[in-house]
Amino acid sequence: GLYNESISMMCNELQSDALSLFLKCPNGSHEVGLNREKYIPRSSNVSPTALAMYTFLGKVMAAEAIHKKNPLALDFPSLVWKQLVS
Image (tube, rainbow, N blue to C red; front, side):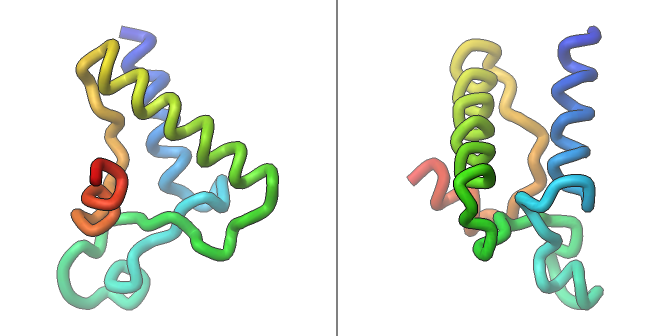
């Protein structure tokens, strides 16, 4: 439906150049190795606005996973997912 489509579009926008929250894995930037399509958080992005956006995204991720049983379609490498879920 429309809700799922809007969530999918949000994930696509997060993993694009439109926002500065995430960037392509180094393997994707250099077109070598595995995980070329994965994205990682931009570690240099520590402004108060960026931190608030990361916090909001974390809340959206939790709400989707807990209430909807539908994790967001964010393409993170396993190293990032392991850190997120401990």
